[in-house]
Amino acid sequence: MTTPSTPTATTSAPSTIPGATGTRSVSRVVTGLVEGVKRSTTVLGWVSRAGWVVLGAGVLALVVGQRFGWLEPIVVAGGLLTLVVGAIAFAVGRHPYRVRLRLREGRVVVGERAMGAIEVTNVSHRRVLPARIELPVGPARASFALPTLGAGAEHDELFAIPTERRGVITVGPVSSVRGDPLGLIRRAVLWTEPEDLYVHPRTITIGGSAAGFLHDLEGRETREITNADLSFHALREYVPGDDRRYVHWRSSARTGTLMVRQFEETRRSHLVLALSVQERDYAHPDEMELAISAVGSLGLHALSSESDLTAMTSEEVLQHRTRRQLLDGLTRIEASRTPTTIVDLARTITRDVQRATVVVLAFGSAVSPHQIRAAGAVLPAGVRALAVQASLAEDATLAASRLGNVSVLTLPTLEELPRGFRKVER
Image 1 (tube, rainbow, N blue to C red):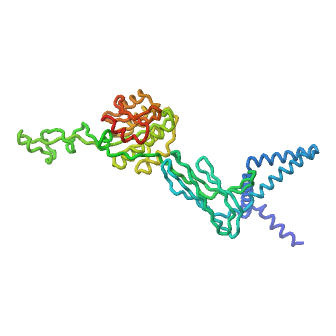
Image 2: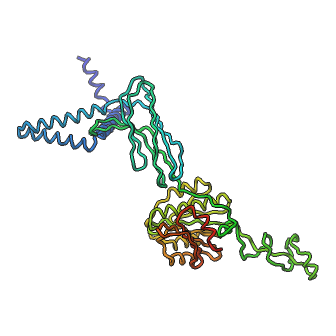
Image 3: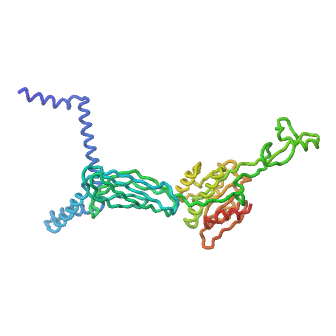
């Protein structure tokens, strides 16, 4: 009689005496419930919208048939539910793969060929059934048939990425998919992380800056007088503390007074490239692409000549320590619909960019002459201002004009940019 009582006492102890053992038991129960919910959610996630429609129609037909004793709805319900069960059979199966996504290059120029590859390896010791590989490429989705793979077998898929437009294209993640031909059940397993492909804007090499407006990029004289520079300005009497190296001995002998040279300060060039990203400033989206390409070409020229550079848009300042940084920043630019104007952009330059010597404003043909003149009026005094106005109108031609203190270059094609600078009056 005493033997049955011992297990009873032992079994009831955890429920009556609070302690660590009881806490672990409750924790295991809760964890099991959570994992069960997760598994159920995953399984339910296999069912597509079409699958839910078919399943719901089957259940409804079954209920109606049994409620009213009609044979036809029951037969229809049997067929629909059989479809769902059969679809589940297609989705069941292992995904014993090792998948690798490779992009041949992470950065290309608009129009260049961009290639990628997917490598799939069966890492199991058994043959696996066919499946489907899906790969998002930007807003589109590519799909490849994956054949039956033996143990250790590999399968490669090459694919091309469209690069007709500038932008950042997200490629991936790669997923293996099993499902029925009707698309009722779809079981996907993700294998890779997404990768970004930068499609850089087109740029053009700008020749030597000795002619035309680009001469200003090498530095220009100011009206500020200094005691040591390259550009001789005048003579003045010596005062204590002047560097004796700049004493002009011939003039000193003629006047009987020590005379020293004065110079005009040659200020190091600081180029500001300012791009409008306002959608309303462009009559056509391709005008914005032309303006971006022009800014990119000028920026690369400034970097190669080691000029001080500030690259900015009406929304942000672009990183530009290297060619890649500048082009990546231009690649990420998107059109905006904020109320900012090129006059506001010019005010930002005046407020935030110190010692600017050359300012290039880039925008489209929808900007009026009044706005251009007003933008030039708010730029700092002494700054050389150029407006590059991209225009794709049928009658647009390369032209240079002047509005207030702004030299305006009408640019119909990127290839005419170097010649356009030679047309701008200095």
